[in-house]
Structure formats: C-alpha cells, structure tokens
Length: 209
Image 1 (spheres, rainbow, N blue to C red):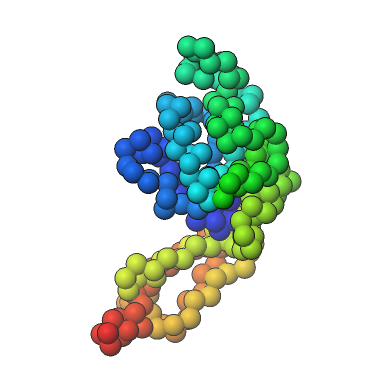
Image 2 (cartoon, rainbow, N blue to C red):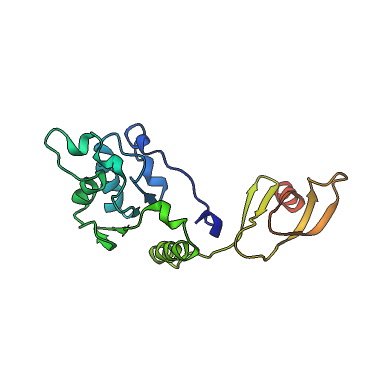
C-alpha cells in the first residue's frame, strides 16, 4: 500500500488503554496478529467500540503463525481461542471468514492471507490492493509519490517502484536542494527523486492574512 502512494502510519494498540478516545482520530485501521500479539484482551473491547461507532477495520491473516500456540491470555485461564483474532471476532459478532461485514455503524473486512505472502508476487500484491481499495469509500487513488506541506515548505518524493511517471509541481518556489537556491515556477521530479521547496505563495498568503 505504501508503494501505491497510500499515506500509512503505525498505530500503537497499547495506547487505547492509556489515552481516552485514542482511536477516534482514525477512520480505517489495518490489523494483523501474524507476528505481534495483543497483550490485553481489553484492546479488543476498545476496537469493537470503535468499529461500532463507525470505524473500518481490515484484519489480514490466516492464523498460520506458529506463535499463536504460545501461551497467552487467548488460550489460558479457560480461554480456548486458536488465536487472538477469534476473541475480537466474537466481540464483533462476525465469523472471521474472509469477507466484509457490517457491524452497527462500522465495517469489518477480513482478508485470509498471511501478510508475508502479499509480498511474494506482484499478483498477490495487486489482489491485496484491490481488496483494501474496495473497503474505502470512493476507492483509493493510487500514485507513485507523496507530497506534504509543512508551513512554507513543500516536500515531495517519487518512488522508484510502480509507475515511471514523473511528478510535476507548479507554483512559485525556492529550490532548497540546489546550491544557489534558484526561484522556479515548475519542479519536475523523476522516479527515485525528491524535492524540498520553499513555497513563496504560502508566505504571500500568510502576509495577506
């Protein structure tokens, strides 16, 4: 997904017990237990509440990680879940089979493939991208670059993988990565390239306000 231009960020699941409404800042989460396991079943209560309020949860995994058999709360003290996701699916009242489920105001999507296998072939990667895009309203607009604006600074990066199309940015900029800091009207960034631009229009707009 990252190589398709989707801005992702890690979410620390333990924070649901530290900060009230920690998950409220997100509308879509991707979760897997095929490597790291949840330390506390209370995390699932918070996740289920977030989904019920309108969140979109995408769970990816096929349950084949051998560490599901390690001793943990999901298989101790009377619990007999094959893996932690089964406890979560029970709270959400979904079967856990591959598919998309409506849960109160939210959605649970289950993709029954080990995350590592998504990286093995281009076909597997495309199938995963198609599945995720189908969950997002309006789909995902795939691209080969990232851009962000931080105050007057425009930062852009074009990835080497994927489309070979360059990114063209137009405006009034100072090119901060050139020795003489030229003022330019257009910046063309080829794949595997990046840019740090000082946006003169942003300064003008700030001075007007």
